[in-house]
Image (cartoon, rainbow, N blue to C red; front, side, top):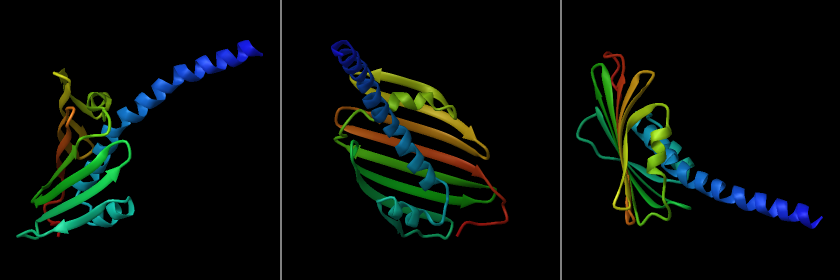
Length: 172
């Protein structure tokens, strides 16, 4: 009985670090997913973000072809996240941009693990205790450029997307 209990305890301890590591590693990918939504041009993004617990708003733009978004959220295990989004519509394509910043992140958010996403290819470096990455990628109809970094004091994720679209239909 004791041997079985010891084996169970050893197995639980062996699994615990992997589970904790997976949660931390998934944070950068989760933040990227949110940035992708803001950069997508979805006209209901503020409503979606609000439903997800973000304090989100659309800012003033000087043209109907550009939409500006701001959002903030405190995320457990991450910290206070500030987001800026921009969607510009051109004939034949939409440019989407999203930047997320976390000052004093609560944990390592897993910049290096973004390299494991199949839709991205790029370079990742660990330098002087920081993690830095640059990628490009593509999904159906959308090209990506991504920068991400984390140091002991800050996390940043910057996404630019280019989406092909019908030139006849402006996003307003």
